[in-house]
Length: 482
Image 1 (cartoon, rainbow, N blue to C red):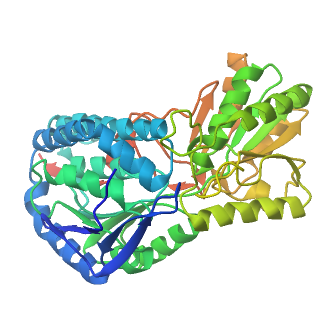
Image 2 (cartoon, rainbow, N blue to C red; image 1 turned 180 degrees about the vertical axis):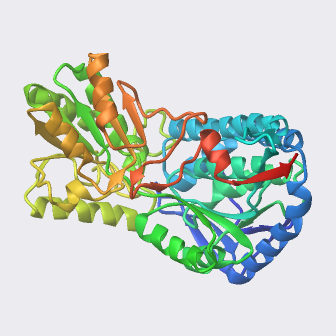
């Protein structure tokens, strides 16, 4: 795929513009420069917020049916551009092409789902509320919260954007989107699709740039009624602090250190596949990575033998290699960060069972072998902190209550997985886990209809499903004397 030498990094009030902040975009599989995107700073944020504010009145007055029709056009546009979007994902992010295909399909499905919810809003609007007194009547209105700022990460470009943007538009909000400066290319293509779908000028705006130059002023802008952020806990705290200056709404999707529990009656073949999928999909660069594997004592030896063999058979390769199973980490900084965690784990006394190095056949690019640790100290960073790379830590347990306690012993609580042939036992374990989503004998499937978010420091609020729409709505009650 050929890329222009430079690309405009601003879409404001219906116009593509070049900012004055150059962002070098690198192919993580080759380390080659793909292009330079010219993004903005606080001045571009000011322009985008002004455009969104001006557009909000007319857009918020449109019907749910009108907004739903536009969202369906976006979904259709994404499907029409599927191959190009896939290639942009893989080129800019480093993930295999088959993973990029899953992402693009998720984007289309999310816009389609929220189109349906938007169309239902007209019927639900002004619904009645029963009161204990016959002297009064009441009705409920669900109204858009205003101009919203969306700040999205690099690990799932377009996906996290769709999870926020589709419900925000469905609710009647106007948007200023800040994509990650690391992976702007698929986001820019998605923005081009949206720009061609007939949204009024100013309803959707995009400002590429760094967190300091764009994210910080967006979170502080008094015209922005709400910030929805996905990223690290450290940056999430900064976003929340900035938003507090103007007491605006905040939704946060942050980190995870999730567990996969392999119970004593588990299907070992399934358990191994789910462990590899939960730890090595997207090169482990997932907040939902089940990077802590808790396995029953009686299965542990055979499980580790099979897991090691399966991990070492994973083909790490260029994202466009037809036999690729795992691609590259997103950039040099992330590559070095994960290597640092591995080195520290070894120094802390953990046993490196497999991997931990660059594959010998890939001298260039940010590639790393699938990595497995055992005997990990439970107070070590390797066990407690989010690595965001292809690193699994395996720990044995003798009692089921011990496994549950270990899984819950974390400041995070995003997801968890349980593997067991006993449906009733697995269900009880799922109910005991402090996580927003639990999979039983299933890969990490995510549906637009089901909520996404977690307990503790993993999340503030929920995305997807009707909860994702409600996150961009205000509730108004009108009470009238009869």
